[in-house]
Length: 115
Image (cartoon, rainbow, N blue to C red; front, top):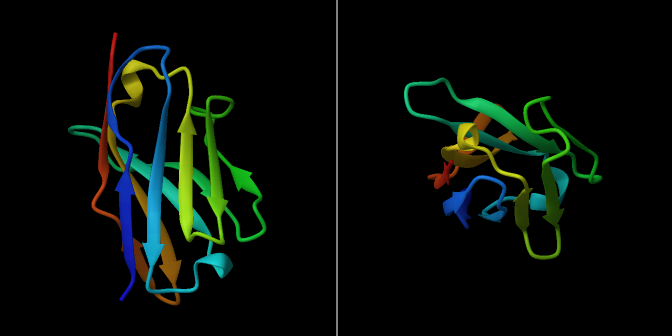
């Protein structure tokens, strides 16, 4: 079955960096678009980054220039490099993929940025 497992979250100070990972299994990773989302307390889940199978990526304005999504199709791994973190980046971060008509999410990893 499809499984997505995030890791790499933690507590950092503003201006520092973190690199999140998402281990994928149970599907053909290399042919699927992958996304990162985040959800802060009392807020709706927010899209953070997308990477196509060919490696093309896009981002919302809120993280453009600070976050970089990447993938290693040989290892079935998705990454999110987050630089210059801000307190407003504090959230649970999730990786996600769509397969046919279903969405699949990981369990999330907590990122906390102190000021």
